[in-house]
Length: 196
Ligand code: BEZ
Image (cartoon, rainbow, N blue to C red; front, side, top):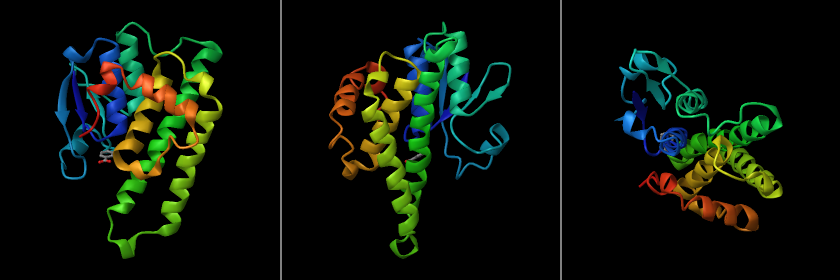
């Protein structure tokens, strides 16, 4: 299998951590990809987003949620509860985490524009979304238990804030979230994927 990815992408990092936790990493060739500059990547993934996973028979899977669920299905079904509320709790956690990334990645892109072309309203609304998602995690921190798609996605989303927006100081006023993240971040799968 071939995983088109970038170490800076939180969506790709989530997939790599899932693969690692499932013991599948040795079966995956990691292919560094920049969708903005590689026109040919559109032939692999027409929506031009990373990650994408190319299976040995040529089938290409995307987006990160689909890839994680596929990897779990071939890796022993350890990260997605099969059914019931347990399943929907972790899927909701993943949705919150991906929602944070969906706010933080465009925020990062906006900050790369010339200062006079940046939209203060856009940045403020993304910052508000990120704050509210972190508050939601803090107030339901008891849900952050074990290693599953929800906790992996949450740890990665917070890691993206550490990487791109250290000035946010998301730990401030959120002691439960901070403590949980500190413990989760000790996992080798997390440590080995911290973006440089
Ligand atoms: C980043 O550099 O922050 C980034 C790169 C690829 C995908 C998402 C974010």
